[in-house]
Length: 311
Length: 248
Image (cartoon, rainbow over all chains, first blue to last red; front, top):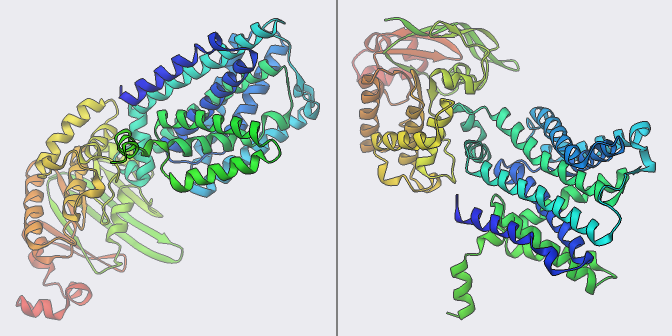
């Protein structure tokens, strides 16, 4: 295991101590943070490792949310609903991936974006199952005490994050990760050395979808009510990409730090510039990407220290 | 010698243009076949058809007795067909070692990355790049990248190796070195098909020559006979070459 992977694991484990520190607001932030990290780490598998810029995260977030919501409605317990949501997301992404991943670059990005719209429309029209535009009420799973509820869902999301982190690290140091790196750098050459690129890309797309699906599931159970515009929100696709870009493509640790930094920025900006927070956040992101195009990971620790010392 | 590769009436069309037209060609196990012809004759297309980069429009390709006309390129690679590219195709951000390890690992499913890196070290040493193992492929010189390409192809432990202009862009010393490597590879029992413009190398290395012109095979035989063939002189070598070598 690389040092950066070790730091990543430690970072995730530290996050688990959050309930010791704060109240319901902190836990809410923590849950959102864990969710963002899941989305960003997942995006990095297809976007960072394999080099296919996917905008499909919102599709699988919504799919996971609705799958879990509907299953909970049928009295399936949460611990069982989440793996089902994840499995379904993996399967659907894997199957669609075999087709969509024939496209490259912008074409793939647009196609993956269309996937979000397609799933949203299907959910909108399957009124009997999903409630359509009226949304879906989801039974309360964790009890009625506010703090207990907050703590339960924080840990549920954190657990998904932990599994995601372990999976992502396992992928990056495995044959699969090696193959994805080959595909990103030269897909034609990858095929010529005997790499089944379609299979590898499909698995990567499936992996990038399944934890997002699980996160969507936890989200649905947490907020008790979902509707198509909420869970198929395109921001679930865009934000992870911005986070990954801030952190540095391809590096799991970088992406995770990017996600956390983005959330801090978002929260600080929102608190201080409530009137025009989107504009300020946008300007900050543009500035970051302009001056640090390779993300935070391109800053080397030694370099930073030297600069601070003024040498 | 048994036939390792057999092309039967193979054609490849791009729209209305025939890049290959009814090519029938057999390659025997153990030989070094030179594939020559003017630019655009279909030499690279022939390699692309066999390695399944661009499948044949019609006709049949058999490798070691099995029909491979419709296999995917990664499957062709796993069967022991490997190639180098005219324009080198490294994984630019990876080290030279990992470039070769990728070839060793993916051409044989079940090879661990550890074993693949061990094998890669040997192949790098064979092409004389052991000192560059840790360098990223993008930083290597063209001559080194060509040798890296060769190491990659060899790491797949091919039975049939296509060399697509491995000498293009190299200086005399580098060409000599590459030629030496080709001889050694052939000695280890690998059948070689080489696309080459340097006639000196072709005559020095090849046991047989096949000539393509406008997608059709116009000559096929022993090097000495082929360079005297009037159709070949007309299409490719030119009168000057023929005169200079006393065949005109």
